[in-house]
Length: 142
Image (tube, rainbow, N blue to C red):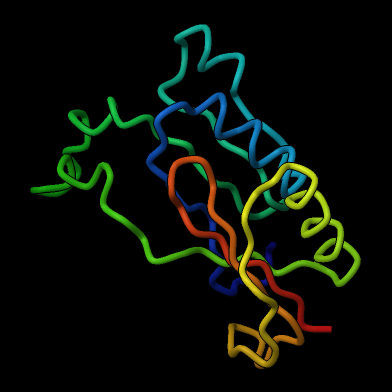
């Protein structure tokens, strides 16, 4: 983390129920919930889930949109779709994720092979949706 290269720090997803969203990402991706208790107690504005030591997903409730004033028009972003976000996993974790999604009856796409990404051609990838309609791509390179 200290080599000075640019890294993805976080992605903010608009969600209807941040606690439920945190549970979904914990059950499917194995992401570590952060600040869920504090959010439920009303002491923080949103919870997050940790994907790895460098990257988190912030789970922003739609009600927070009215406070988004960092640039003009930011408050209108709630509910605006992002095409998808992609997580890269080791092959065993990739297979385990697909199995967990099947166990939970979460619809997934067919596998694709050779899709281009940040590290070149991925060996396999697939897509699935979260309960709020966000699309997630999972892939592995090895």
